[in-house]
Length: 541
Image (cartoon, rainbow, N blue to C red; front, side, top):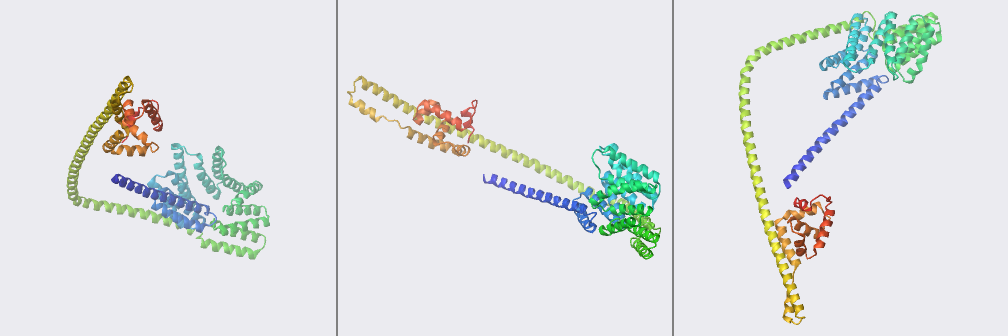
């Protein structure tokens, strides 16, 4: 009993420790995911804080080997770096994420990364490379649409990026074609898409470049409140284009207002900084047109200075930055290939050396397995013998118990027979006394001396029954605590298969009382009509 309790106690403690560990891990995962979503919420308003949180999340997800989340952290970090004009770090983050997608076959993330790489190369006027990555993204996303039940909106981001790419290169027909594709996708989607405002803004820019100033103005002003309500950093671009429209319409005040709002928004959120030099130069041009030369000079100087501080994202000199990084990356890959070849060569030399060692280890392993097998079969046979011994002991104990119960039943029946004989003698003497009309004093004296003592008979029987069936009363009390001492007596007699008549004699009650007691006992034991009371009690103890 003590060993069983100890076993369950250890199992409980082990389960408790495992449960606590799982609970702690689950809570850590919840906290980590909260931190990640917190970083995303700060991505456009507090980018420095967002970067710190994303770096922490990337490290934590790496420790958890959650590659998908590591890729998400890297792509979001790249987006912030690009917005801050830190193109070197943006490039590094994208390539690190791309390598992870190749290892894990994460085609969904791979398509998004190719979009970002295309836009990054486009910033540096690396048109061939930009188009190459955009087209890779299109191919991957189309494959996803064929192989999975994915939404056609997957392609929207690539079509949108291609529309911007061709618009910035004055290829307005191609830009319009890709923008029409975006609208077709959105029209297929029944639910509202927040991406429509960006597509509408891009449509307005195309209207502006094709001379439709009024339509462009109305469209931008209609979506301006939506961007303003969301505190979207995209306002840097939207305000800049509104400034262009009003400049083209020779509305000095509104043009100045929106150029200044574009500059203010970029400086406030430290976002879309690559637009700042152009915004200052546009403002300088506006002041110059209106003969405000001092402001024109100051803004032109700010634009040039800022352009240099941001490494001149669109300048000819800095357009070689990605080429240098590409060359470095390609060289690194070549070095890795050379290192692999050297490792293969060393492996060939090591192969012979390890051959004999492997043979020795194999022999040792086989010998160990043989010994383990011998031990296993020995222990299994030993356990089998122990179980057989245990079964034999249990059968022997069961036989002994049956013999003792039979002896007990025989002894009880002898007591019952004795009482029946005394009762019979007493009845005969009573009859004889009645025939003599009560004249025989000796007969009366004998009758008064004949007494049956059912209580003493029961105490004798119960003492011997308890000695033989020690666990019966304990099990009965434990399973059915509401049973009385009288119920216990009845259960003991039923267990030994006594008849109702014998029970009545031994308990000193009538047969009818025995039947009533049996009926009440069935109710207390919650037995159904078809349940056998004797079989039920026989299984107890």
